Each structure stands twice: as structure tokens, then as C-alpha cells.
Length: 63
Length: 526
Image (cartoon, rainbow over all chains, first blue to last red; front, top):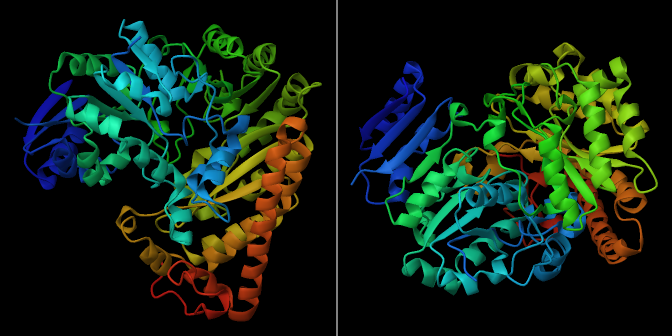
């Protein structure tokens, strides 16, 4: 799969989305994060980004 | 004159470290025994700038971003941090890069834990970002994009992310995404919060631009990626790409035109330039070094592996042949950073089996010693980095490291212990010292200290700081070494009196004389 977009609300959902993307061998994962600002979005995804990942992850604030 | 995009970093990055890249290590520490301004002058002097405040030499990563944006027709420039003010009224984007924004990497994090003082790299970066002119520009709508090898640190410093008003953080090789991101920022469109660039989005050699302005100390990348696949290193996931000689020459020409006479060849393992897998390519390496010596009087390597040195010398006499190319009236020694990582064969098997290849992992100690003997004989001076506190590390691993340190004590080198510091300890560095450091760690650090003090003097005064230009540095360095030796002797006396455990409590009991420090063993061990 080339690119997958997932809406997430918390670190647990972000972690699951990253694990699923790894299994599905996507090239890019776009995490649309329900958050107030960029820093809060980063807080929601940071645990999921601890390991070196074999695909691109883009975290966006879901407006 | 104005620029839409300003690319910069703080003083600890925007400097040539007096033309001595190893001195850059000092920016990872708090000032020790010297006032901060002297420490900054010693480790990070201001660079020469042109009339527009653009540094003659700038960090290579910033130069790559600048080149990519200029190639796309975007008005961008690397600007010295002291000269940002005049452009910030009209600039739309500020891009910052760093090796260690918040002193979370080793060795900064270890110096911070041990001394209890914030390292100068972090202090300097925060000072820059909090300047009124940047805050004012931010209020007016300036977009801030952060990147570089320490980009990940923003994820764990979201309070500062908010305070400093960062819009986007880019983590990884940015060539494929940066033009699009900056274009969006210039158009006022929304930006992603964080971009982590995976190996599939790593740029091809053709997509990597040649730098337009000179790089710090003539730094030139010759390849990207590494086939050795060490577990702790993210570079290994990315594809291996060799720059053709013409591309390397274009960058060397830029540096030579700026008046630089010294250059650093950058690769994760320089002896793999042009290699087929792990098999060295002597012809490519000899041509690379001949080319470098056409543009630079002196050169250094960024990194090499010990297995690579041993193998290249034994099979091709390559170290001898390369130093024959490099050494002349201007140069009779060569510096390089080398990952020693561990003396434990068990841990080496888990963390870095490829680092010993083509030799079996059981030969690790022999590989290290043989390679260091070759380097010693050829006046190649390694700064060896050692990882302590890796997950799963046991007491016997540290004992093997001590055995290895004993075996290599007579080879000219510096040994820099780096601690693996779990993220959980970054908010409480004293707890890290109390809970994770063991007497065996303290003993390893003690041996490294004496090894580096012994050889540091030899390297500094017989090689690194020779000539009349280095006289002021020699003086300051002499004072620093005398101070470090005095401290080391104090530590030795402390160990004699209270045992090695006493070293583990230096930070939490700061301000007390050594004789007052409790020799109590750590509460919990890794």
C-alpha cells in the first residue's frame, strides 16, 4: 500500500495505527490527530515513534 | 536585501570549533573549571560572516537544505544567529537544525547527570530561540520548522515546542519533502506537526543537491546509509548510496573557493566508499583520497569501523596505501571517530554483528586490537566511543569491556564513554545516576578518563594543536588538562578512601567536599 490515513485521538490509537501500518507494509502513514495544536499532536504520537520505522509517518492536527 | 527563508542554528553549531572538529565535543558539556564565555570561545568561536551576515562556513546539513531550496527557486539563506535580526521583519520561515537541541544525546546527557549542570549546547539553543526579535517575528506570523539529527527530541520537549512556537518538526533525510513543506509555509497553508521520513522516502543521489556555500571544516558527504545494520543505529535502514566523484568534487570546489584548506570526508564507514557489500573498493578509495588532496591540504575521516581497518589492511594494504596518498608536507596524521561500543562479545552479537564482519563475532577483541595497532602505526588517531548501560547489559559485559580497555591501553586514542539513557530518566538525571550506574560502570569510566588524559596530552600537543596559530588554544587546553588531571587525582584519592562506589554519588551530593561524599552503593542496579 502506498499511503494510509488514520484518524487517532490518543497515544494508544496512534500505537495501534503504526503497528497495523508496519504489518500492511505501507509506504506512508498519515496520522490525523485530534489535538489542540502541533505539540499536543506530537504528545499523542511520540510513544508510537520510539522505534525506527521502515515507513514515513506524518502527524497532522485534525482540524 | 531580504530572504523569505532563514536557515540557522545556535552558536554551538554555527562555528568551526577553531578548525578542529573534535573540539566540538566540548559544546556537549557544561563549562568545567572555566567561565561560560571562555568555554564558548574555546569550543564554539564565532565564524567569519559576509556583509549579509551569512557565515563563510555553516553546518553541512543546513547547507543541504539551503541548496535544495535555492534549486527550487526559493529565496533562502543560511544566516548566522547574531545576524538574524535584520531579516526577521520580512522573513516568512525560520528553519533550525541541531545535533542535540536539548542535550538529550550522549555525551551531553551524561555530563549533565554527572555535573548537575545544563550543557552549553542546550543553553545556547534556548537563548537563541528566546531572543526578542525571534519572539516578535513569531507573533507576526513567522513559521518555524525544526529538523536535523536531533529532531526527535522535540517529541519529548513539547512544553518548549509550545513556548518556542515551532510549527513543524522534520525527522530524517529531508530532500524529498522539504521544498513542499516550505512552499506550503510560504503560502500560509497549514503544516503537519511532525514528519518522520522512512527509508522509502530517502532521496536518491540525484535528488541530493550539492552545497552552494562552504561547510564547517570542509565537511563533505561521500555516501549515505550503511550496510552493517547495527541495532542502535537508524542509518542502517536507509539504502546505501555512493556519491560519484564528480558530485564530491563539486562540493570540495565550493569549500576550496571559500578558502578552506582542511576537509572531512563523511561516511558511516569511510572504507566502504564504493564497496560491493562489505568488500572494500581500493580503486574508488584511492581516487577519493587523491581527489580530496587536490582540494584540501589536510583531511580527516568522520567515521571508520575497526573491522574495516583490519580487513582493508590485511587484504589490500589499503591503510598504508591511503596514508601514502594523504601524508605529505602538510599532514602526517589523520583523525577519525570510531564506534568501539562494547567489549562484550555477547552484547556485540546482539547489538552489532555486522560491525565485526567479515570476521566472526568471537574475534571482536582481536579485531579491535589489531585495528588499533594498524591505526597507531599509521598515525591514525581514533576517538573511540563506548556505549554503557545498553538494555540487557550485565556485570560480565562490563568486565569484558574492562579487559578490552586493558588490552588497548598502549594504542594512541581517546575513549569517550557514552551512556544509554532511557527517556524516563531525562526528567530526573540524579535518579539515573542513583539507579542505573553501577560500580563497574564507574570503573570503566575511570579507565577511560585515565586513558584519554594520558593520550590526550600526546595527541593535543604533538598532533592536534601544533603550529603558531594554535598557540592560544594550546595555552587554554594546557590549563584545562591540568584542571582535569587535578580532578582525576582527587577522584583517585576518593576511590582509595571510600571505594569505587563513591563516584556514583558525585552529582546528588554536589557542593560537598569529596571527603563528605557517602560511599553508599546505588539503591538499584540496571
